[in-house]
View 1 (cartoon, one colour):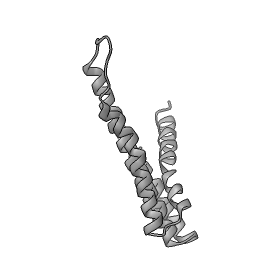
View 2 (tube, helix red, strand yellow):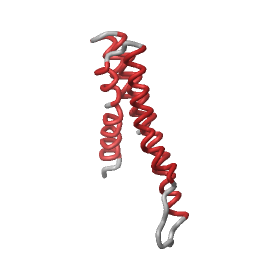
View 3 (tube, helix red, strand yellow):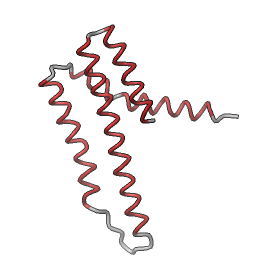
Length: 121
């Protein structure tokens, strides 16, 4: 799904370069990379949560490390800060960056369709 997210985002950036402007294409590409980073960080956070749960299997009251919660929250703060810098410093259209962030959804849909049709009898 990760490469599909980047593929969908860069494909949309290519279309935006011809239809809208190169600056909008850059915004879509930046948004797609941020969506990919968001997915990677989420995957790592869930992996850490699962590892902590497995390590505490059978414990009466399992504890989740505070760092896991902090990483989940900081993920959004970092993405918001990067979007702000992209829009304010690079003067990229905000709507283009948001469109790039939607590449994660496009990648998930493409992956679901692949799994549905590639594995059907």
